[in-house]
Image (cartoon, rainbow, N blue to C red):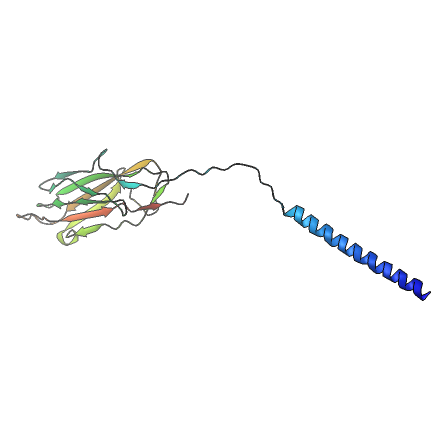
Length: 187
């Protein structure tokens, strides 16, 4: 009887071991089948471009003067590695003289742009009783974060006003430069 019990015990151990191996094999097979992920579909990637600059031709920057003020044609400096700048040099003689300039920012790229911080470089304007007002051509004020859509343009108007007394020699050698303060907008 002792021999029979040992034989049954051995058979039971082999059966349990076989059962455990079988269950583990099924688990591994199921995991392998479940890990295969099949994705059907197509995707396309389109190229994108970034190009925002001050327009130099159509329309070209232009300025008009009233009273005894004068102004030369604005100068646009274009750069492929940095922001384009536009430089304006007004001269004034009589209080109330104004110089009004119009210029256009153009986005020829395929990505939207947003307006960054406008930080013009001004030489001798505030110390000479000269105020400046920068607006869009519809007279609304530019604000950081304004969007310039891809393949579009936005006109700007800059007005200089001399608020001081008449100066016989005039106030000359003034310069005002502004960069294209646009950056890529999140799509």
